[in-house]
Amino acid sequence: MSRERCMAALFALGAVCFVVAPFPGYAQLVGAQADAITFFIGSLLFTGGGMLQAAIAFPERRSARTGRAAWRAAAIQLAGTLFFNITTYQAVHTSLTNTSYDRVVWRPDAFGSTCFLLSGVIAYRASARDGWRPAHDGAGWWEPSLNLLGCVLFGIAAVAGYVVPATGSPLDLAAANVNTVLGAACFLACAVATLRTGRTRKSPRLQRLRALRRRRATRAA
Image (cartoon, rainbow, N blue to C red; front, side, top):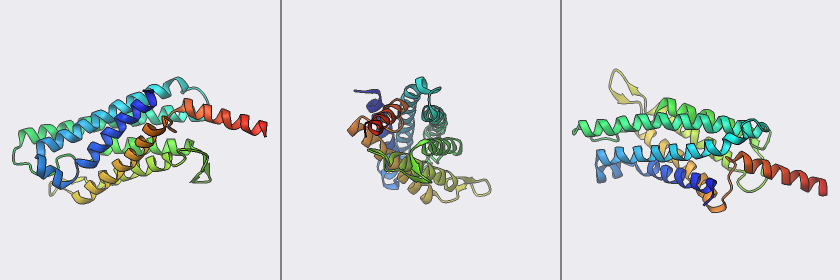
């Protein structure tokens, strides 16, 4: 299996965890502890995928604009996954030490979500576009857009999950859960596409090879 497919498999499995865990029915079925552990496992899988993405992007970090952007996006996203590791671990600790805690125990982390959003913006800006709209320039042209949408949804979930100090309750727990699910579904779709084709817009090496083929085709024409 290629590094791109391994990366995609880790992201896909992590996204599945974040799609399933926010559902209240899942938490009621398995309990708060197992629900918190699901989030934590998902965050670890995201970190594994982020490490592979950074490793893929690192050799191209000083190459063309897309290579530099891919490295920055991967490094910032990896930092975001580490923030998620911390907050989801804290949720596991809460569920283990407070047996009366019976709601969804993880709320989206503001630092992690901000890192994801910055990463998504960098990747989208580096992708082929017609103005602000994505250019339909081949397979996977939609990946940067859908990835950015997932990052935006995670950001909305972070705001909705903010705990108001005066009440000790999130602003809107339902909105936080819904946007977490939708954001994770966007990441899952991108990961599944990479698993199917073995190609991803996250790989600067593949982007460089694709650009080289386009230049050759233009010259031949």
